[in-house]
Length: 354
Image 1 (cartoon, helix red, strand yellow):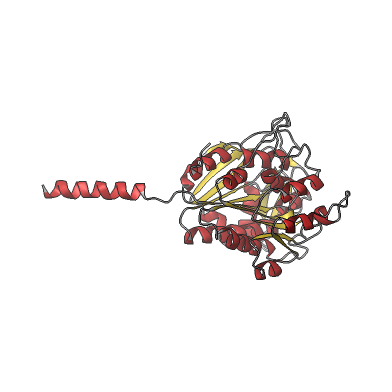
Image 2 (cartoon, one colour; image 1 turned 180 degrees about the vertical axis):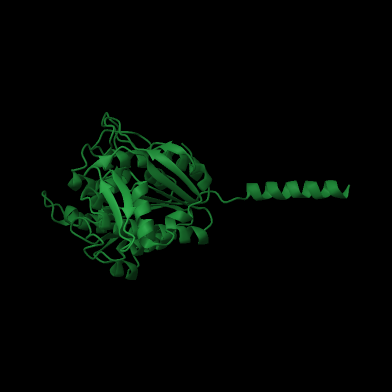
């Protein structure tokens, strides 16, 4: 009898724990633009220490082809990740028939969650635009800036001030943003000192400088700032963080640039994972929109410890990209997935209603 009671108590305890496990409340979606497995490995070998990415609870792979090309661009790749819909290269937040499709960020807003984007490119660049804009062509950055004004983001941080201030149509989007309740800042320090609820932080005319050209710790610091703002919403939040310039360095076949940008991105990953450790119900996703450079590591100099690598292209490649997950429900991402699978899975884990 005593043994039966113990067994029943144990079952009840397990069921209680199962039923009280944290539900996903916060999602931090980190995209290393152009980041393939070899980019990550090069950073790991160069650092000669464990990366934050290696703390992941689950690892998978993602296919990246677009609706009309075997090799995607960032517009189609970003749109697939954000909306769960494949589209043609160059298109932002639209399906191949030019009909707007909506992102997980948009769904989060509909459910009263806070939302934000942090990038090292212009905030109007293809990947961030895929989460907030709907345009036929990624080059329509003036129009994408208008979409950002109307996006209801709680915070956006990156470059791109010229698309809000020095426009061909002479429109003053900074004034429009302030009229909507935003504080607009041109340094992270200013943004942290202000009490405005919504913040737009524009740190460069276009893209930020590269790490090699002195960007410093902007990305991890901006990630901290955004998390501090978004976590004030008790319902939860969605934050997209992009290491935009891994891609740019790979386009240039700049191995040292790839390593530096990937290590910088990994710092932001660490900030996100540390936040998840302290905040129950936080899911961290790390992936890429595509691989850039067809990069292959060929060896390492024994004396100098310098990596040797070759790039097979100055453009994107079609290879699957890595997927890492950490925190609440991370195990759901241990799979070989399509880039369109992420959005519906996040929608399900948030328990949003259609």
